[in-house]
Length: 107
Image (cartoon, rainbow, N blue to C red):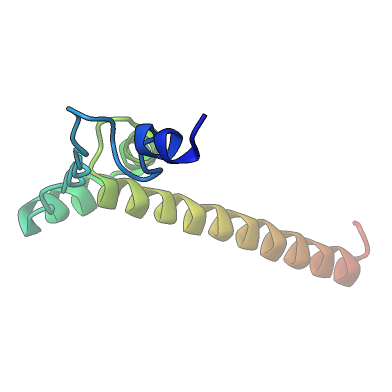
């Protein structure tokens, strides 16, 4: 066989087959969430000030599936600070208890 005939029948490497076109599919734009209003944040902060309700709502907002992303991140940060506060308070009480026990000799 002639090498010229073979090269004429072959398609170039980077072109689509005859009759087909390269189609560029633009990726979908990421969905943007509407920002929380000032009134929403005022209500959120007010609800978290209620002792037991606030803690429950922080867990719901932090780990709920239909919560705004910024509110979920804020709730997670609040829970982290609450955990740090509880640990610091426990350390403080243990230190004060140890000091009192050392001072008064265990009655």
